[in-house]
Image (tube, rainbow, N blue to C red; front, side, top):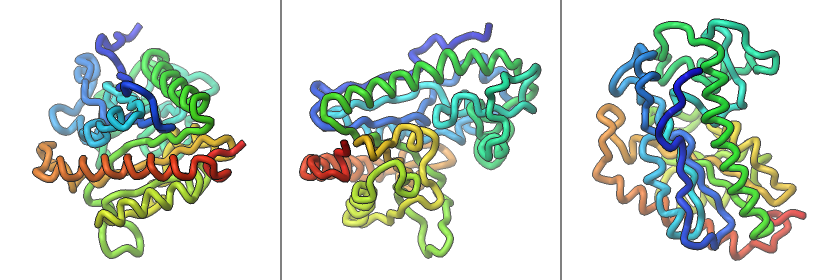
Length: 293
């Protein structure tokens, strides 16, 4: 049996009172690296941290003060990625046979970014040797399934309490991101799975709020949202899921991982965004596009 992390694998930062129909989720900002994982890895120091969404939990840290829960992963994305199907696994990584229900052919697996990732950024291989299949299955049982159970409970609670709900899935993207046809890099990308995970009105409002604050914001390209956005967004049932990607270069030094001097400014802008989104939803809560039957 693989050693299970002894720390709290995630935390739910609850508001004093859940007063707005939002759930915030930071699945990739975890930065507690299990010692046995580090021992397995050929990467050390900053290299293993290249796939973190650095400090995103802090950027969206005002969720509780605004009246919404924030679910935060403590485990790192390089260890296990909850923004994947539960069994997106690469058979080349493991000794032994994967279960027949494993999705071994997805594009994410092919790219080395399955549920148990093979690489971090820039194709840096994580492991020095193959892992036992049982280790992958143990991580999924001990980390993936409890995390999603907690997220489902938060979304269901919100839906019951308010009659609808909005999940904001919080991420960051590399500073060198480029968008085809665009002359400048985006500061924020709003993903709604091309209109399938949230109402178009909601995602357009998210883009316009950032634009009005002077940021470059676009929708869906190149990040339209991952498994979490796709899986939990059900606009026809009044459940909306948006993914937000923040350009890392505007708030962190991507080499040293030190917060930039502008970090509080960016965090403040995101807090303003969260408040404006809550105000928008409160104003249009009765709109059938948001609160579907």
